[in-house]
Amino acid sequence: MTFQNTREYAQNLDAQDELKTYRDEFIFPQHNGKNVIYFTGNSLGLQPKRAKSYVDEVMNDWANLAVEGHFYAEKPWWDYQERFANPLSKIVGANPSEVAVMNTLTINLHLLMVSFYRPTASRYKIICEEKAFPSDQYMFQSQVIHHGFNPSETIIEIKRREGEHNIRLEDILSKIEEVGDELALVLFGGVNYYTGQVFDMKTITEAGHKVGANVGFDLAHAAGNIKLELHEWNVDFAAWCSYKYMNSGPGNVSGCFVHEKHHQTNLPRFAGWWGHNKERRFKMEPNFDPVHGADGWQVSNLPILSLAPYLASVDMFAEIGMEKLIQKRNQITSYLEFVLHEIDKEVDSTFEIITPSNQEERACQLSVFLHGEGRSLFDYLMKNGVITDWREPNVIRLAPVPLYTSYEDMFEFGQILKKGILANVK
Ligand SMILES: *Cc1c(COP(=O)(O)O)cnc(C)c1O
Image (cartoon, rainbow, N blue to C red; front, side, top):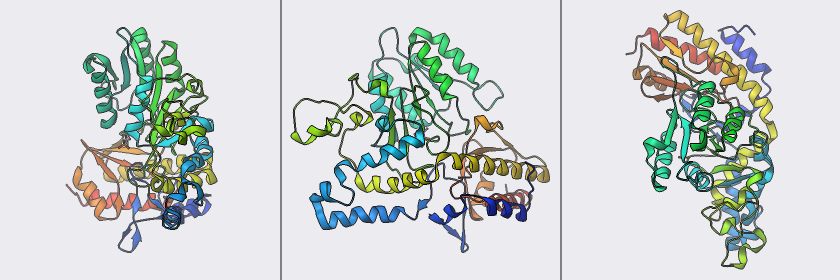
C-alpha cells in the first residue's frame, strides 16, 4: 500500500476503519478542548466508558447486599473470576481452564517461578533477555538468591550484537543449546518493552523443552496486542498485566496461564484457600487440594472492584476479536512508520526507528531513537497534546493502539513533531 502524508488521506483511512466506533468507547484526556494524541496505551490504556457501569454494579451490590453479595450479587463475587475464563482464553490462545486472573504481574511471575523454577545443583541456570523490564530483573535475582545461587553465574542474558538494536532469534537458540543440561528455565518477554520487538515464542519454547528446561513468558506488552497461541506453542506458564493494552485501570490485576499438562501434577506452589478444591473451599479443611487448572494457583479471594473494569475490557475484546485488532494494528503502525520517515526526510534525518521494520517481529509500538533532540522534544510534544513516553538514553515510545487511535492522529502527530524539530527545541 502506498500511503500519503496528508490529512485527507488519513481521514479517508479513518472513514474505512472497521473499528472507528470504538474510539467513542474511551475517555481521552483533553488538551485545549480536544482529545490528546495518546501513544502510551502500552503503559496505561485509556478508560473504557463501560468500565464505570461494571464498577457501579459491584458498589451497588455491596451497598444493598453486603456479605450476601458473595452469592446473590448480580454477578456473584465468589466465582466472579470465572467470567474471564472464556473470553480471556481466546485472547491468549488457551483453553479456559488454563487461564486465571489474580494478584499483579510480578507477584504472579514469582508464584509461577515457585512451581517452574526448581533449581538443582546441576540444573539451575535461567535464560532471559538483555534489558528485561527492571521488575523482572529484580525478580530473577531475588529468586536465584532465595535458592542459594549466585545471580551472576546463574542468570544468562541474551545480548544484542554490537551495533544492533534487536536480539537475534539464532542467538537465543544457540545459547539455549549451549547451556543445555544446566538450563532450568527460559523466561522471556513476549514483546520487549523497550524496542517493541516480538519474540518467536513457539520456537523458543521448543528449543527450551529440547534441553529439558521449563519455558515461560512475561506477556505484559503482548496480551491484547499480538496473536498468542500459548496452548499450541506448549508454553509452560505465562503472566501479563491488564492495564497496558487491556485498559483495565492503573496497577490492576494480572492474568496468568498454566499449561494443561501441568494441571494434574500437583506441582509445588505457594498455596491459599482460593486455590483449594472449589466444591470444598468453604468446608475449611486442613489439607490443601488444588483445583486442577490455573485457578489452582490462586491464593486469596479476589479483589472484585479491580476485576470489574478488567471484565468490561475483556468483554470488549471478545466482542471485537483479536483478528480485527491485529489487522488495524498492522496498518496504523505502518502508517505511523511512513509518517515518521516522511517527516525525517523533511527535517534532515534526526531520528531512527529501532523497532524491527519487519511486520512479523513487531506489534503496536515504534521506539524512536532521537539523535539530535533530547528530552526537550519530548516535553514539546507533551505541551502540544501528544502523550508519548520517554526512556533513557534518548528514546520515545509510540504505541498507536488500534482500539482508540485514529489515522488522523498519526498525521497530526507528524505535523507537531516536525514543528518541534524545526523550532530547534533543544
Ligand atoms: C509493565 C511491566 C511489568 C509491571 O509489573 P507489575 O508487577 O504489574 O508492576 C512487568 N514486566 C514487564 C515486562 C512490563 O512491561
